[in-house]
Image (cartoon, rainbow, N blue to C red; front, side, top):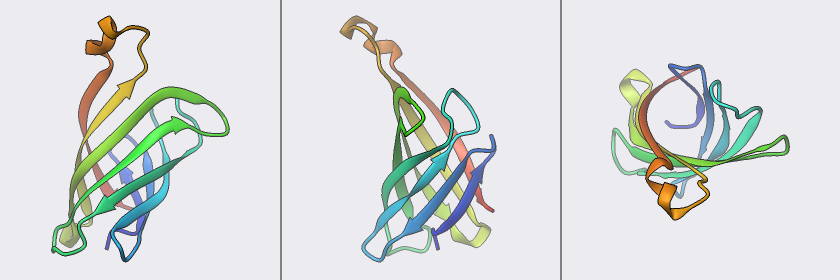
Length: 114
């Protein structure tokens, strides 16, 4: 089951609620970067398989601040070991189309159930 609190190797926390229709809703609290506090998280998951694929995203704006960026994670939940393996894309605002090449970063996170 996807619902629960998940922590990645950097100490960031995703609190996920999986609905019966395949939606993911929750909050994300980043332990890195200039984000502080909780941020709204939205996503989807494949509810018809043993190791469901999923995706969720966060736009880094909350009541405290805006980081002018968004992140999307995609991955697979391995329910038998309570681990979600993800690849992420972080897109930041740039001032010109000439700088667009530098706007996107890519990486991986492994989340384990708290």
